[in-house]
Image 1 (cartoon, rainbow, N blue to C red):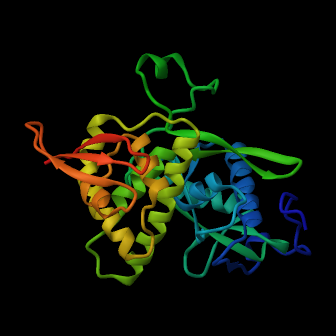
Image 2 (cartoon, rainbow, N blue to C red):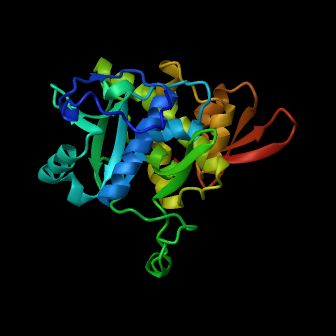
Length: 301
C-alpha cells in the first residue's frame, strides 16, 4: 500500500465508526502519511499549525536509523482552534480523525484507517513554545511588519515524503525545539514515567541541536544563554547517569549555539587538560587540546 494514497472507504460504513487501534511504535512511513493527512486537513480547513516535539526531531533526522520512538504527534495550534467546540466540529467533519474510547485524538493510518497515531494538541504560547507563528525569512508570508519588528521565524518548512512524492510541512525552528525540551526536563523527579520522558527529551535535544547547526541557525542570545548555562551542568550530569552522555560532537554543537562547556565536564574529559588560572573576571581555565593548542574557558561564578 502507498502511504500517500487516499484512505479508501470501508464498505459503506460511517468512517468515524470504524474501530481504531492506536500505534505505539509507528514506522517512519506511517509518520509521513500522518503528516501528509494533517497538512491536507490544515490546508482545506484553513488553519495554521506547526509540528513540535518528537516528530519534529524525527523529521530533522530523516529516514535514518531510528534512535528514538515517536509515540505521539505533537502539534502547536493557533488559539481559535484550541477551543473545545471548534476542535470537536473539526473532528466531526474530518474522516481522517477520530476519538478513541480513552478520549484520545488520533489520525488514522494503515489499511482502511484501522490504525491510529495519537495527536497531542498544544496551544500557542504554552508549554514553553512561542506565542505566535512567524514564517521563515524566505517565505512570501514573512511580511514587512515582521522585518520592521525584527521578528525571527518560529518555524521552518521541512521537505519530507517518499522518492517522487515530496511535500513540505511546518516544523518548529530547531533551536526553539531544543529550548523547549531543555526547560521541560524535570531533573528532580522520582516518577519513572517522567524519567522515561526525560531520556526521550535528551535524545530529541541532541537532534534539535544538530539541525540548528547544520542549517546555520544563529546562536542563542547572550541573555538566553545566561539563563540556561547554569542549568546545563546539571542536565549533562543527569544525561550521563541515564546513559545518554553528551559526547564531543554534542558539546561542539552547544558551543556553536552560544553555550560554554562546564568546567567540570572538561576536567572529566580525556581529550583536554584543564589548568585553573587566577582572573579578576571570575573562574578561568586554560585548556590544552590534543593538538597542543591552548584556549581559555571563562566560567560563570
